[in-house]
Each structure stands twice: as C-alpha cells, then as structure tokens.
Image (cartoon, rainbow, N blue to C red):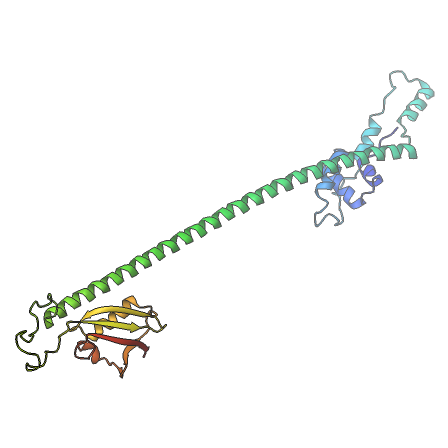
Length: 301
C-alpha cells in the first residue's frame, strides 16, 4: 500500500490547502506529526490564511514522490530479456490507494491529531494554573503591602494624637502655673497674699454696755466665693482672693470650663444686671462688689 504524502494527508483530514502547504513548507516536509504541530501552534497567527507562495523550483510533495519512486527494488542482477524488464516496470509502478486504505490512514492521522490536541490542552491548562498561582501570589504580596501601609498610617496617627494630648496637657499645666503665679504676685502687691491677720477687728469691751458703745465694725473679707454659670447651664465654683482682678475668674473659666476652644465670651452679674467690660477685668473683685460671694454668668460676645 502506498502511503499518502504529508500534504495529501493534511488535505484528507480537512485542513485548508493554504494552511497545509504552509505547514509542509515551514517544517521542511519532515512528516505529518511536525506539520500538525506547526498548524496547532500557529492556528491563531494573523497571517495564517494569507496566500502561500512557494519558492521557485520547490514543488510540495515532489521530493517524497521522487524518493518513493527511486527507492523501488532493482532486479538488474537477475533480469534477462523482456520478462525482466516487464517485472521491473510493474514493481516500480505506484499502485493508487483504495478508499478503505485512505480512510484507515486518515483515522490514524486523526487519532494522532487528537492526541496532539489533548497534549496541547493539558500543557495550556498547566500554564494557566501557573499563571493563576503567580496572580494569587502577586495579589497576596500587594495585600500585605497595603496592610503594612495602613498599619504605618495608624501608628503615625496614634503617635500624633499622643503628642497632641501631651502638648494640650502641658499647655493646661502652664496656664494653671501662670494663674498660681499671678495670684501670688497680686497677693503680694495688694497685701492679701499673706496669711490672714491674727489681729481681730476691734470689738466693744465686754464690760461696756452694748447699748451705749459705738456700732460694731463691719467685717473685712479677704476671699470671695464665685459661682459661674456656663453656656450649657452647668456651674463651677471657686474661691479667689478679694484683691484678685476679675480677669483671674475669666482665665479660670477658660481652663476649667467647657467653653469651645476659640470661643470669645464675657461675664455678667444677673442681679443687678451688669455686663463687665475689658476695663472691669483689671479691677479687684472687692472693688466690683463681688466679695464675699457672687454669682456670674458666662455669655457670648
């Protein structure tokens, strides 16, 4: 049985002639397996269906035909006469394949092609799995980088908040210390910062009848109890020296009250109603009539 050439086999399998010719030419006509491998690898090439132009002097299938013709057995050593020449001519003649033989060969080639395609699909599946592994690995690395950046940002934010709290605490401490120093300085300046005088106010002699003696002397207070009603209705109470200025009360409200930061406010006395000005802030509490006790109200400017 004569074998089909590579080009004929591809055509019998249903491949387009143009593609089949390209496969045979590009594999050097080395066999059906190489041609099928080339077709499967290049089936998606953009120029796969462009017309194939064979080189000059190269006829596809000619080499195989000539080789099969020249490889027929020679009977020159034993040939004699016309009978030998006829026998040699009959053996060198190429018998065409029957339809059954063609179908059998096409089946073998199709089975070979299915095997090749299965191998190719398995290879592509393995490559796809490897690519998926790489994508997952890159995704995990990217997630780790993002998580580290978020952790760093949270750490920076926490450090910043701690610094702000510390700075605010130090600022409050400085204000308290300044208030304490101001109290001491004003007490020393106005004579009210020392310990209360042990000299009691002049009292009428017990031996002298009260009905005939002078009226009792008015008691002198050196402290004032101030109650302040804040903007939200709550109150705070503190004791100040009688000679301290009203500004000390306002500073105390700024530090210990719950007024919003940056909120400008002033103080007023409800009964009788009197709004204290900036000039009043420098006057002592005693001079403003806020001794021994008073109630003040915080109001917005």
